[in-house]
Image 1 (cartoon, rainbow, N blue to C red):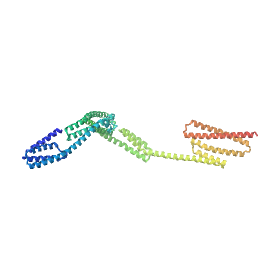
Image 2 (cartoon, helix red, strand yellow):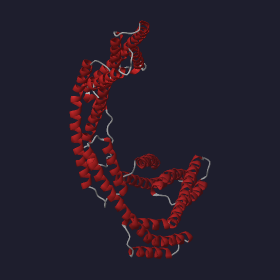
Image 3 (tube, helix red, strand yellow):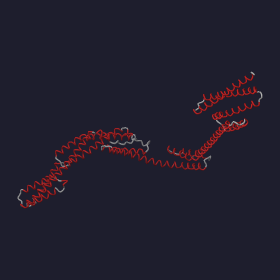
Image 4 (spheres, helix red, strand yellow):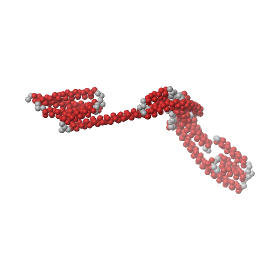
Length: 510
């Protein structure tokens, strides 16, 4: 209802009061009635109709000009003045409230105009629309939907604020010129918001319908899981509620998606019926597999297990089973034979543990031999016979250990020290038993030359193995140490031979 209509209504109410005054016989009754009406008009201070009040006041002043009892005139005039003063106070309060409301409306319009100038920045700050990545029909145009949704979110907010402000301005009692000025400012904002919003809604609605058509075109009931399709349809329906679509687009998309939903429900129902029939067939096989499991559990080495398994597989071939059913049953057969695999695994673990214990025992024996060798070499008072006996005993122990080639080389290094010690003691004994010193030196020289040849051959073999084999770093280092040790023994033996030759030459020249 506009302001002119409201004014016409108030004029009609004053005319009704005038007609009512004709029912009174005296002017005093008329004034008394008008004063009561004026008082009633001011009762609700928050919603005073001043146009109506002023109309009553003018009627009252007109009747005061007519003949009235002087005593009554004084009393009525006093009441008139009191009511008028009260109306002035209420008008002042009312004007203050109106001024405050106008100020707030102007501030709101200022804020709206400022936000309109920053439209792009405000649209960027809007939270992104959540799209299901599986919806390729929409996800391929993700940026378009995100940007349009942001712009429309801001424009929708603007339109709500504009409509709310327009209603507020219309119902606020203010001068018509001021009211028109505020409405004109608000219309300037609306001239940008509403056409742009209408155009974006039209484009978005058409694009969304195109995406729905694309989704329906690629709608595949045969190669998709039903729960995934249902989830996609529900996601599309939820997005349709969030997006600002026109009525045609929203209704059409809902109908098309509902049709897809019905197709999924029908297909799902048929699948469940087929699955129920398939389950009956599968149960026939599972009964046989359960019997196989009991057989494997009672005696994992039963010779009939393999035959029973073959019978089950052949029976499966005679049935109409889906690939999923076949996979399920094969996996069930595998689980049924689990006791056999568990036994084999248990035996394997036991075998590994035994091998580990044997290896630990062998390594410990090797370590004991090494320690015993070191003790023998460190004993200076031990006799030649004792050393030889100990060596024979250690040789027997070494043979029983089945040493690897690499381990044997390492052990030989320590044994050679023992051999050298035995040879030294033999040399001493040789000189003690032989009266002919020259003959003893010649015999010793011959022995050392044979030893030199053996040592030279052994050294060459080690060098050849080091250069021709792809050893890791640790083994290569050990081979290098063995070569260095043998080379040192070779040099010491060579020096010993030279010394013996000089000694023999000296004895022969005497």
